[in-house]
Every structure is written in structure tokens, then in C-alpha cells.
Length: 66
Image 1 (cartoon, rainbow, N blue to C red):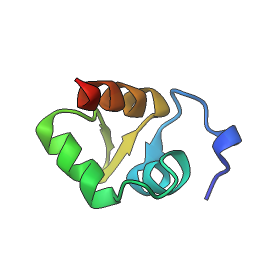
Image 2 (image 1 turned 180 degrees about the horizontal axis):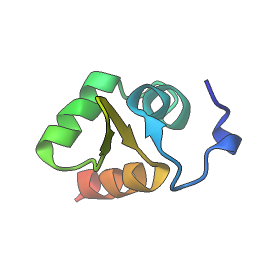
Image 3 (image 1 turned 30 degrees about the vertical axis):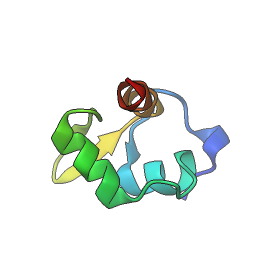
Image 4 (image 1 turned 60 degrees about the vertical axis):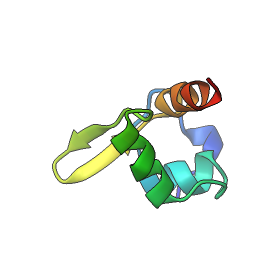
């Protein structure tokens, strides 16, 4: 698992990394998947894998505050 300081705002990260590193375990991967379905979290599909970014997570948090 990468360190938070190694992740730039637009670096692709897995949903697991987003949950564990960026959101510090406060939000589970299944919750992130629900936010994707709701249209609140943008992702990039590379092969079978879903990736998001710190920028997309910041945007999701803004949408959830509204």
C-alpha cells in the first residue's frame, strides 16, 4: 500500500487505496461503489479494474455535502 504523500491528486488509485489510505478507513470500498452507482464518484476503468483519484474523491465529498 502506498503512502498518502506518494499519491498526487490525479494519480489513479484503486478503490481499496482510496478507502484505506485517502479516506483512512472511514468509508468502505462497498460505500465507494455505491457512490459510483449514484453518480457521485467518478472512476476510470482500466481492464477489469476501477480507479479513482484524490481529485475525484474531493469532488464526491463536495457533492455529498450539498
